[in-house]
Every structure is written in C-alpha cells, then in structure tokens.
Image (tube, rainbow, N blue to C red; front, side):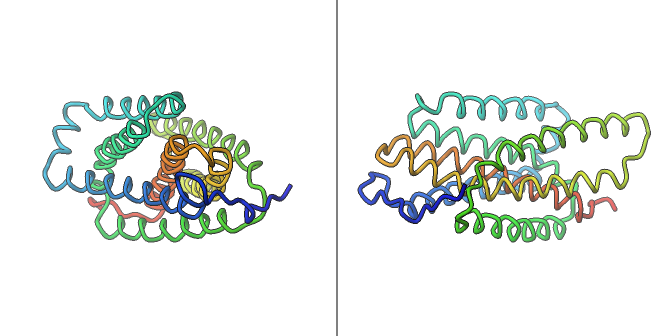
Length: 239
C-alpha cells in the first residue's frame, strides 16, 4: 500500500515542520558521526588505543555500547529528552573508541575512500526513502531477518577461520549482502522519520526523543555501510 506523506503538516507542532524535524534528526546523526570519527582518530594519534588493546577495555566498551542502546530503546518513553541526547553522544564516543582499532588497521587513503563511497550510497538511499511514495514498512521485518541470517553466517565463517579454513570469496559475498541490507535500512529508517513525526506531531518531548532514536538508527546504518565498504575495498596498513 502506498502512502502519501505530502499532506502531513504539523506547522503548529512545538518541534517545527516535518522538514525541520528531519533536518534536526540528520543533524544529530552527522554530529554523532563527527564525534565518533574524531574520538577514533584521536585514540590512534595519541596512542590511547594501545592501552585499550592491552588492557582488554574494548570488551567493556562494547558491553557499555549495548547497554546504552538497550536503555535508550527500552526507556525512551520515560527518559528526559536531554538524557536521551546524552546517551546518544555517549554511544558515539564509545563507538569511536571501539572503531579506533579499525583506523589503526587500515591506511588513511582506504578510510577516506570508504567514507566517501559510503556517504554516496547512504545519501542515495536516504533521498529515496524521503521522496518515494511507496510504503517501505514491509521492508523492516525482511531486512532484520536478513541481518540476523548475515550475523549467523558471519559467526560460522569466523569459526571456520579459527580452525584454519579459509573463508575467501564467501567473506566478500557476506560484505556485499551486508552492504545491501544497510542500504535498504537507510531508506526504511529515513521514511520511518515521517511515521514518528506523524504519530508524535503535537508532543515536543517525544518528537525530540524520536528524533534521537531516528538519528541513532541512521548513524548505525552509515557506520555499517562504511565498515562493509572498508572490508571490501580497504588496504591494511601492514600490506
């Protein structure tokens, strides 16, 4: 079923119009990405990454990331808007620390290439999700099912690698599938912003928090697109 969002109008909303809501959400996302990449690059250039690796703190920061996402998702109704915003940026900082090992492993040119190509792919799908009149809600369950299958296949491949079996071309195929999944999620999550605005149109607090949730979803879409492209095209620093 197609839905036309052109008639949605909440000019009286305390949060502004639909276009202002979406601009605010993408602004949060870009700010989160900036924090993540600055923290990651800073951890490498200052040498902070080495004590993180040797002490095993990456395990704790990874667990902390999961906790923050769970709290933000499960308690979004009761959190203060400022708390939700703080959790989002705390997640961006922790993810920057975790990604610092990636920044160390790949050369600078590969990182820039992956970022630029990822930005193009993300931008195209975000524009599609924004302008299409096609209802993309049916994509959600299918894409999440594909993501679960991808994770399972990646875990199986990791086990084979541990026992000395090469994964080779299959790893490239999984990267391509992962890239397609998160490109689809980018369009889906972009359109979901219109659902959030339509549903919470008169509630400034919930609009703020749904904007943060939307920004987190889009942030994760971009990060995963970047990482899959980096795995496919990137050149390691020690090559």
